[in-house]
Structures are given as structure tokens and as C-alpha cells.
Image (cartoon, rainbow, N blue to C red; front, top):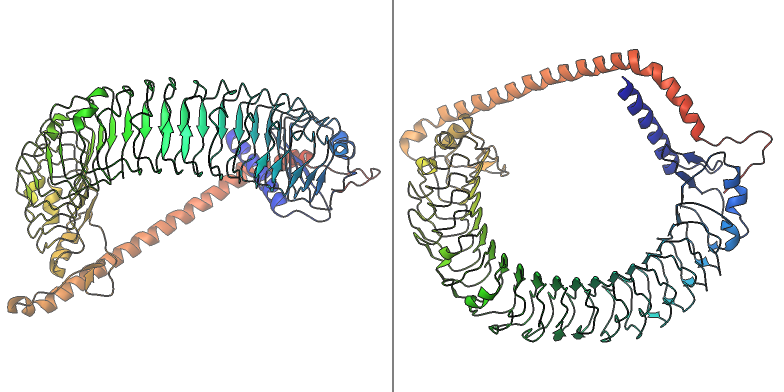
Length: 634
């Protein structure tokens, strides 16, 4: 009962807060104090003028302390020093159509976090934020076009500055000179074309900088030389063509330079670099760009122009790579043995290239994931050597046959994708050692027949997709080894006769069979649905169908003679199903009504007596003007 009482009180207070914030009165500006000692002031009564003193006119008259101030949906076109004289909070958020911040507006502002996002600030006056106590300043989603030298002077304690989503085109060279304690700077999503040399010179503690989504065409070799603690650099989505990072801080841990126009890069000697993203550029070679990157673990080079082949010495100085992505590089051939130098490589992706054959003989690396989809592979030799594989993607290739030993030693493989090939033949025993395989996709191939015993060894299989093939007959006994199968898709084949209930006898955990798009007769579908088998309903109701799955009536004379009986049986069966559903619905309605009545009775007996005290407690959270006190409007 105590828990119910607390929940009820909390619920009513949140409802009151929500209603007031959503539907503010034009006659009364309401001040609300929550349990978390946060003050929410919803200013919508009048336009605040520059002479307004927040501390004198409102906060000084409050009889309780507050920690956070949130100002929303108001109109405060100008912020000046008089408004915030000696105001002390932890966090202040103002979203009130602010346009101008006057000189030294926050000089006497004793606040650690100031958020002025989503206003219309176009210009910042000199020393607007000259308060040494501000540690976090956010000016996101405004209309700031330039940063001047003295705009942030006095912010000696600032650690995080967010300026993303503005219209900044230029930052004067010494604009950040006083931000000696800054650790994180976000200048993303602006219109910067260049960065002045020495702009970050005094930011010796800077760890993270975002410059992505600007119009940068280049970066000076020494632009970050003063940032001795820099660990994360994001310059993605710009127009940079050449990037020489040899003189960047050796502390760099992660660099994202994707989606540029890079034709030449050099990251040599960045001994602590762990993650490098160069996806979607115009690189033709990186052979001499990765010298001494022995700490590098993740390298992304997808969708460049490294093809048709890669120099065998390219990765000699990246011995600790764990992830290597070479998708979409126009590769026609690659010497897989060149990767033997990468003794820790666990993820290799070569998708969306033009590879026709691969040979994995003499490759001794602990690959866990191998992505070879969207190539032109017709032959893969010695793939069974990859006995550590857990995920293998061979989809969208030209494979025609899966041999007996293709996956011979992959005993821990859990995901195997073979869809969109030209596979006609699956040799018996090809899956014999895949006891941990959970997901097998054979869809969109040319398979005609699946022999009994083909799935021997797939004791852990949960998902099997053999849709969009040419299978005309499916022996239910093929599933005798797949006892954990949960999802089976046999749609869009040429099946006309299948006892779905017999599949259930082999697969104890079966939850769904998808079988539309075949040559079913209506009688066969009805028999399958009667068998209490979890069949997926279709969506084709404008043709002859059973539960939305299209079907046809047979044309031989004996079945034509029994057509009327089949229709009657179908009608009776559907009527019985409808009657059963109606009966269940009626019973559930009665049960729900009874539960509602019981809940009301319990509420009247136990909860309502507590609600009065709850409302009495809620009164203290509203500011009530004394009759002799002058009315205050915001």
C-alpha cells in the first residue's frame, strides 16, 4: 500500500507538471518545484526586457533553494549582465528566441553549465561569457556566423564547448587562446572552409575535437601541434584532398576522415593510433601511409580505389589489426597470404568487389568474421582452413556447388549466408560439423532437391531460409536432425504437397513456417492449418486463398466431384474457427470487466483516502502570491 501511495502521488504530480507545461496560462506564470530540487519556470506571459532582473524580481522571493533553471517557449531577445546579477545555479538552460548576448552578460554568473541551444543568436559580443565558474557551454542550433578574438575571453574554467549546427564561416586565430582548460570542442555542422594556423595552440588539454560536416578543403600539417592530449579527431564529411598527419599529436587514439576527397594520406609514426576510418575517399594506395602503426586495431578503407590489386607490403606495419574493411575497392584479385602478418585479425570484409576466386591455403590467422558478399566468386579453395570462423557471408556471388569439405572444420560457425548464388548441388555431409550453426540462408538459388540427411549435424539450427528456389518436393524427414529449428521459410518454390504437421514431429521448438508463393491446393492448405502447425498467414485476399495464402482447386474429375464437399468442409471449418474466436473474445471481455471493477473497489478502499493527503502535499509546489504582495509577471 505504501508503494501504491507513492506511485499515485508521483503520477498526479507528473500529470500536473505536464498539463501546466503543455497548456500555459496567459494570466498566471506558474513556478513549480519538483522533488529533485529543480525549478522549472515557464515564461509565456510577457516579453522580457533588458532591464529585467531575474535575481531581484523572482529568485530572491523564493523560499526554497533551487539547483537548475529551465526557460522555454519565451521571448527574451537580449541577454545582459543585469538579468543575472549574482545568480547561482548548477545548470541553466534558456531556449527563448535569444538574438543578442551583450558584453559581459554572464560575468557575475555562478553557474557550472550554461545551455543556449535552439535560439537565434547571430553574434556574440566581447567577453559575453567571462565567468571562470562555467565548465560547460553549449550554443548549438543558432545562427552564429563568426567567432571573434574576445568572444570567449574569461572562460578559464571551461572544459566543454559545443558550437555545432551554426553558420560559422570564420574563426579568428586567437579566438580560443584563453580556453586553456578545454577538453572537448565541437565545431561540426558549420561552414568552415579553413582553420587558421595556431587556432588550437593553447589547448594543451584538448582531448576531443569535432570538425565533421564542414567545408574544409585542407588542414595544416601543424594545426593540432599544440594539442598534446588530443585523442579523438573527427574530420569526416568535408572536402579534404591531402592529409599529412605525421606531425599530429602522438596521443591520437581515433581518427575519422571518412567521406572526404582524399587522394593522399600519411599517418606514419602515430604510435598510439587505434582506430582509423578512411571510408569513402579516392585513395589509390596506402602502402607508405601506415608506417609504424603498431597499435592500430581497426582500419576502414571501404569504397576507395585501391583495386584491382593491393601491394603485399601494405599492412606490414599494422601487425595488431583486428578489423580490416576493404569493401567496394574494385579488387579483382588479392593474395590472401599477405594477411599472415596480421596475427590478431578477427574481422575481414572484402564485400562489393570483383573477386572471382580465392585460395585460403596456408593462411594462419584467427578470423572470426569473413564477409565476401557481392563479388563474382565461383570458386573458393581451402576455405575449411578457417576453423575459427563464427560468421561467413558468401551471398550475392556465382557459386554453383557446395562440396563435402567446403565447411569441414568450421565447428564454431554460427551464421552462414549463401543466398543469391547459383547453387544447384549441396553434397550430403557438407554441414556435418556445423553443430553450433544458428542461421542458414540458402534463399534465391537454383536448388531443385534436398536429400534426406543433408542437414545432418545442424543440431543447433534455429533459422533456415530455403525460399526462392526450384524445390518441387520436400521430404519432411530431412528435418530429423534440426530439433531446435524455430523459423522455416519455404516460400516461393514449386511445392504442392507437404504435410506440415510431420515437420513438427522433428522440430520441437518450431514457431513459424512461411509457405506462400507455392503451388498449393486449397485442400492441402486447410489440412495443414488444421494440424495445429504455426503457419504464417499471407496477404493475398483478392484471389482464391486460405488465410491469405493463394491456392488452386484441382481439375481432375474425381476431385471435381468432391468440390462441393470440400467447400462445405472449408465453410464449416472457418465457421467453427470464427465461433471459437467469438467465444474467447466474450470470455475475455467478462474477465476484463471484472478486473476493472475489482481495481476500482480496491482503489476506493485504500487509494482514495491517501489521495487527499497527496493533493495537500502537491499544493506546496505552486507559488501563491500573498494578497499584499505585488504581482510578478514574466
